[in-house]
Image (cartoon, rainbow, N blue to C red):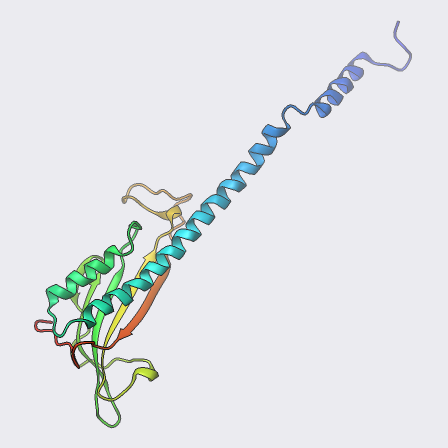
Length: 207
């Protein structure tokens, strides 16, 4: 016999609602589905940040290593410069999403009054292609602390357009990024100066 005021349909729905709210069997799955995207984003951001920092350090080391190898020579030729820049390029491995640009410039600070800062010879690699840099006799600049009359300097500029893994393109048809709009690169670079170690100058015979 049914009690007054009770409705079997409403009572059944209420019982099911109470049962659903008190059922904890799916909580873990729901929490997992909510947390996993956040954890994945944090993982990829941490991985990308660590790779970017390590690559930036390697780009800085390119300048010091290339300058060190050149300043140990008493004379040099284009083939030697190209080989040294190739060594510098391989320094950033295993990163291979873009290639560094390296420019080597021999600089003479004259004894004129006032002193002039002139390019003696220059060689560069950009996009994997070796070529001549600034023309001999071109005016350039050095930090004020290095502007000593009669000084010969080797300057190495190393630059890299760092491509984050989220927008790395393995070829022109495939993008591994999250969206096609993620095409920003991070500019990394360093300029390094050294003086010759074995002679007063380092002439380049065919630059």
